[in-house]
Length: 574
Image 1 (tube, rainbow, N blue to C red):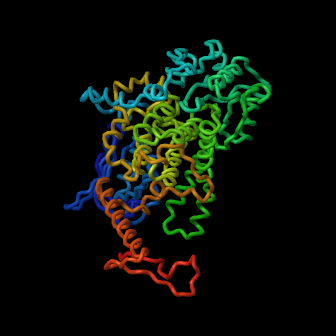
Image 2 (image 1 turned 90 degrees about the horizontal axis):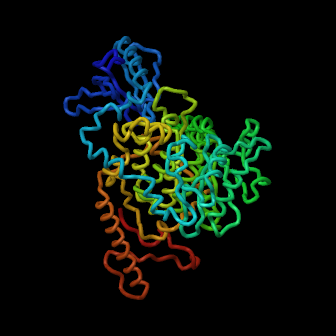
Image 3 (image 1 turned 30 degrees about the vertical axis):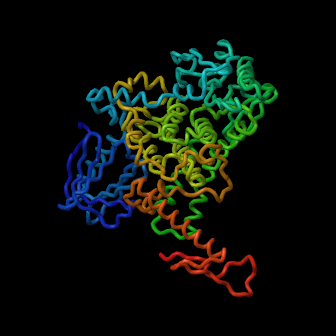
């Protein structure tokens, strides 16, 4: 509370254009230690708007006018609030307070660590046991005679950004593990991410080798060979470098780079062309600018979308996952995936491939496990990428956003294949930024353990699982072949859409208050009506009488045999 200069300001006007609001609301603004709260003055509605300080991404003070001083709040979920203060000093005080409150300097200032977790200790402990990577490894049949658990990183000495539990090829000795770790950026040696029980092929992940122009490591070459040996059905592996080839070549000048096919004789190298975090950050800002256009012309919208390059980047992430999934499922070849340090583009590519390959990851619980395993435990830098603390803004980048958008794009092509709906993806993204729970705090498993987050906060997964009914996709069909098999999306450019629900929410109409049961009932009734109408038409075609209330379509005698009569046949009145 020491950072709050003015805890309460009256006669403040609030306008949120992106929510479709045209007329400002008059009310009172409150500042608490964790939230900015606006309470409308209208005696009947008294509507409240709450904004977590950790969700504020930027503050602006446009020039004042005769009606007062303006403050613009930009949020990480892309909401934009315009506040108009009658007195300039109140605007200055609120701006200074929010500037400090929205940029916490330590984890203890965050919302999830400001509450008392011992109020319900049993619930807190249960929340952390809901989703565990070890459960997913067991589901994949691990350990087995090909892949074994190693204790080499149990104290995070081999790699401080990897989890304590790792699975490696049984042909890799402890000396090979240590040697490979020393030859990989940040010590991130090749380890298992996903095992396909049908083809015995595996997706492994690591970071770039410290090869430079001519450097070699016998242990690292043996490690890659051990990955190949863990798949008895193939005599080579793909190495997927998710970076553009030119970027990877440029890293050689810094003593890093990529694997040489001359030194690693059992690999086939493939570059995916996913750009770095700085390009992605800039690209997302440009698509946000497109979404904020008030009344754009079609040419302005399409030009802005093209210039942002955002959908091109989404396609590159999906293409990387498709390549890996085809190698695993169709060719039965294992794949080793890396980027530079192995915690951004590597997480994207491995996760997308897993979703394409495994129906389990297309369920709510499965996606939670996947993110916990491939993102949280494998050291995706959540606090850096999503600006949890005051730090270098160049470290912020929408890496998880892109993975969630790929899932949304896939759901547009396969609406029955995903158990969860769009709201689940949007809320998951918000929770990654908001710091309401301890799951996404920190940049590694080691750091989270040092913060004792399981003792001081709750897991985000229990929050989402508790509300699972509102996230249920009523079109989901677990028994359909589309849901059970490998997803094979069309990745031609025209298949990609702008995610309006994220980038232009004012254009997305609010769904009706309808439960999944009600929705399915209406779909069932409509299906029954169509089936009855089809039966009636078949009876007419067989020479029977036309039922009452059914119009029989007739065409002119000179129409071609393959042409429909005008009106397209039978019509149902609105």
